Image (cartoon, rainbow, N blue to C red; front, side):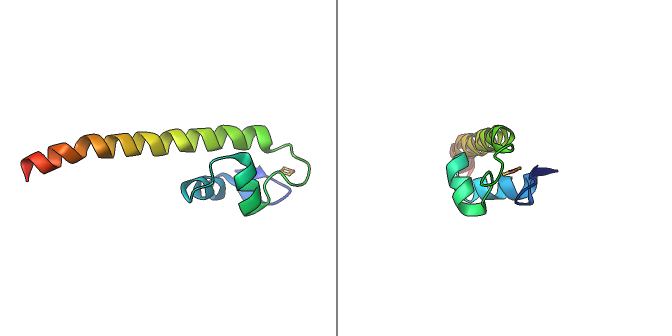
Length: 74
Ligand code: FES
């Protein structure tokens, strides 16, 4: 699904950009150009950025929780 039609940025590319370190619409804009034409994509992009950040935090939390267990069994 295209998030930003004007710059041909799909959801996959947007999520990759967030995983690479862009955490705001502005930083994604600087990396990809998203939102730099009509701006209609910005609300949807913001939701996807927030969702991807929550996924990253959840993955980070589960990794840190499982680390002591792995260390204890080693
Ligand atoms: S749809 Fe993203 S700038 Fe137009």
